[in-house]
Image: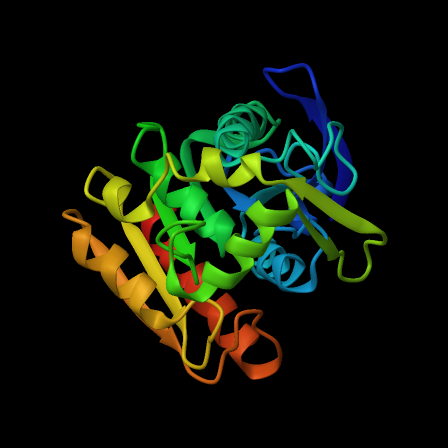
Length: 262
């Protein structure tokens, strides 16, 4: 069962969120459940189909999940121009974790995080500094958000014009517009550097035919991790998994968290 709600972040912005609980919990079961925080990617949002699919698979397996729109994106307060930043997203993740841990029926001692693309990078960096996390899954995450071969031309044009614009995918509408100062902020963060400091079990997933974030990103993140870790390739998956690859990815995520949060 999905419940649309919100929480207030440390900068006073109201962040739109969805808490999903197992059907038996909505009927009144009181046993504490493990929780999973789900983080969306760059210019993405909480309602995207693959995130919904992961949430559904997790709740069907007894987890409570929280998805939210980062500061300045989709239904959350703030401006995409100046509030959507990696540093702010990390703070939002910490505030989201506190919100999930306080949700009735969630066992605050059994919480993990999963993120896709930029959200996977943020999840990895977050797991390196947040001791209360028990497990982290980084799905098709880049090593960083700039200074890489795949984004060189995009970043050059972004700095020259001062702005990056992209149409939201359905069901969201409108255009997300981000100032080039995003890149200056992004240069402070690296999932590869942070991976060395992760202290909870980490699952790294790459897409078999992902040309937006090629597998070498995940391979390098995985190589740097010094604690319990798993590496998984979703065969046939582009950057946004659909169809059979989405089912495969969902199963791997559920298995990983079931093994570590039960």
